[in-house]
Length: 135
Image (cartoon, rainbow, N blue to C red):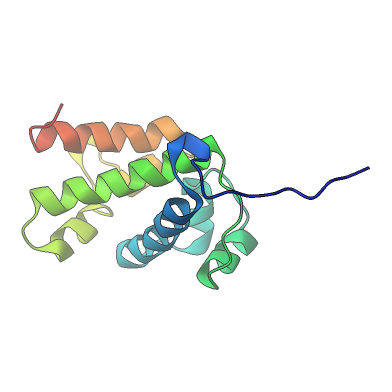
């Protein structure tokens, strides 16, 4: 017989608490708005989740987050952090995401990340980490 799933306030995917994961989901949606990312693009960036899930997130209805999604959220927020460090004007960082970049063969960072793999997001983050002098 099926049993209800109980939730706790303890660590979940990738060591984040449910409250931290919900905050990451909320902030990532705000970031996507600033990057002018459409919901269909966001779905790809988030590991091919459905656009219906994105719609639920926008209503504050956050579902389960597995390790892959937690890693994607964390790295997308890392990209944002790097851009805020590199650019004193936040809008320049938001715009940078969509501008062609020779480091990515003329593609924008968003184009690279939209290839859909977690490592595509990590590639952009590592580039920015190196550009800002991080490791």
